[in-house]
Every structure is written in structure tokens, then in C-alpha cells.
Image 1 (cartoon, helix red, strand yellow):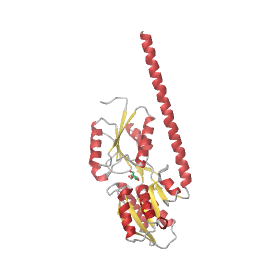
Image 2 (cartoon, rainbow, N blue to C red):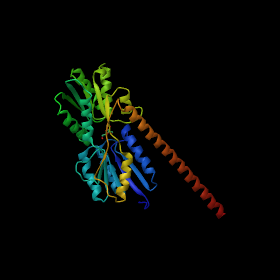
Image 3 (cartoon, rainbow, N blue to C red):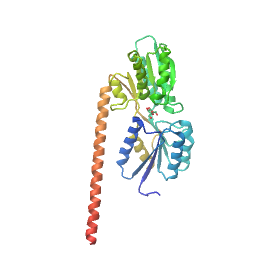
Length: 327
Ligand code: FRU
């Protein structure tokens, strides 16, 4: 049943049990709570494509105003996104894309640029005349994995001194790559640099190298650059990662864009978040910046909670007043 005054935004999240997606959900919730008209419904597909499709189907059936989707993989989620459009629901695709261009808008960093940035960092930070690289990929069929690989290879191919000597197919989680990486090292494959498509897999590879006592002979670079104790920025500060490429979640931008779409404002089809390399030169600055943002977010949450309390107090006193007057 549709509550007329409300703006119903549904978000089909690929999964919610990693810090990157948790942080995305949090910033979406926070941004949504600034507008009392917004009802934000987050569905977590728990990394099962069939579940994601079902959840989108049920959101379509549920008189939604705007649908936000972060597809687990591109291809299988494409037709249900089209279905939403046909049902008259605008769709904002975030982080991972569907296969066709049939969506209202996309929001995310340019993943080809993410891959290029990683490659440029490797080339720039290495004085050796031969650089052997292992590339550790994200889930096959999810657009950031394809695009990061494409951008990375484009740059590496231009430099004779650099070669990708092996690639590992991961699924974004470190458990998916550790045995394969251990196998490569045991096979005595020579490696100077590891580029993993995200920080979780990069740190996972570093753990294996440390087990074998060779972590200082290899440089590791990842993607995401989350702030916080377990984040990529800290890993750079700790010297575990040589660098990471910032991949912002765009949670608050997603809600802002969804609102613009709801209000029928013109927005670009591609909304590109900026990315940058984080290495030992700027890790401290980046960390301080994100800490400040997080503090501000915490303050905002406290203020919102205080406002809510005031409202509740007001309503209960108002009710009391009504009852007293009725007596
Ligand atoms: C989070 C994540 C990130 C990665 C992104 C790609 O679930 O695996 O680590 O950058 O998805 O879509």
C-alpha cells in the first residue's frame, strides 16, 4: 500500500557483509534520514544472483518510486532491470553495471581508470628494468573486474619492462585466492608486484607471502582504500600494501541522485566518482580527511537522534494535552 507523501527508494544490494558495502549502506541510510519523506528499503541479495533477481521483482511489485541496483554480475541482472524500466520505475545502477545501457543512470568511479592508476603506480614506483606482475581478478562477469583488468592491461602493455606473468581468478574475497596464490609461489613463479582488484584480496595475498617469509620481496597493490582500522588506507600506513586505488562507495550521492530522478530533474547518464592513488606519500592526509568526514557523520547521526527524541516528546506531550482537554 503506497503512502502518498512518501518517496520510496529501493536498493538491491549485492551483499552487505563486507566493510565496503556496509559503509555504502550506512551512508545511504544517513543521507536518506535527512529527508523525512524518503523511505529507504535495502534488500541484501547475499551474493546469490537468483535472490537478487527475486528481490528486484518484489521491489517492482511494491510500488517503488526509484530503484537502485548494485548487480552481483552484469548479464543475469540485465533483464530484470529492464523490467523495472518497463514498469515505469527509474533505475540507478551503482558500482557494478548491467550489460545493456538500459538504465536511467549509472553512479560509480571509472573502473578502467582504477586499473590504469594501479598500473601507472607500479611503473612509476619501480626502478628495476624488469617487473613481473601477478594480477588477481575480481568475480568474473562483474563489471569492475572486467574494467579494472582492461585498464590495467592497457597501460602495462605499453611498457616492455613490465609483464603480467600470471593471473588468478578470484571472487572479491580473500579466501578465493589464497590457495591459488600459494600454489604459484610454491611453483617458484617470480613476482615483484601483485595487483589485486580489491584490498581484501591484496591483503589476503600478502598474508600468504608472509606465511612463506617473502612478504618483503613483493609489493602489493589493491583497490578500495577504505578508512578505518581494517581498511586499505591503514594497510598502506602499516606497509602491508604499497598502494591502493580509492574506490568511493558513493552511498550519499546515490540517494541524492535518486531524489533528483524522483523530482524529474535532468541528470547525466554517467555519474563518475573520482578515484586516486593512495600510497605512503598521501595515506596520512587521506586518513585524516576521512576521519573528519566520519566524525561529521557521527555528529549528524547524533543530531538526528536528538531531533527524533524531541519529536517523540512533543507528540507524547501533545497527546497528553489532548487527553487532558478531553477530560
Ligand atoms: C565490495 C567489493 C569491493 C570492490 C567492489 C567491486 O563488495 O568487492 O571490494 O571494489 O565490490 O564491485
